[in-house]
Length: 64
Image (cartoon, rainbow, N blue to C red; front, side, top):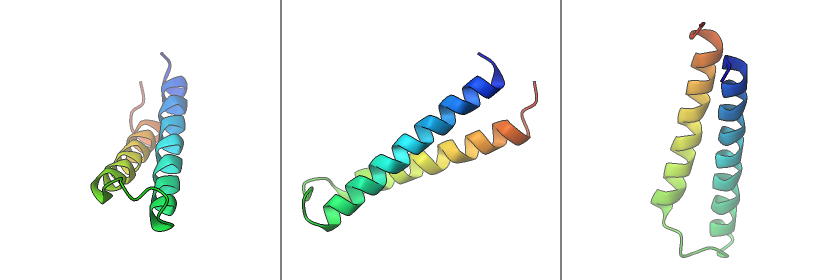
């Protein structure tokens, strides 16, 4: 798998995780999804941030 292809996949997964986390956070605030614990939402946000940092590092520092 080439570097740009891998970076594209990581960026897509980052976008999906961030979108899901924001959607769940908003629905929880509107009391639609009250059964989802805050820790799960926090893990989604942290996963999205970690993938963003990996994507950035790969794009700038990891030259193969």
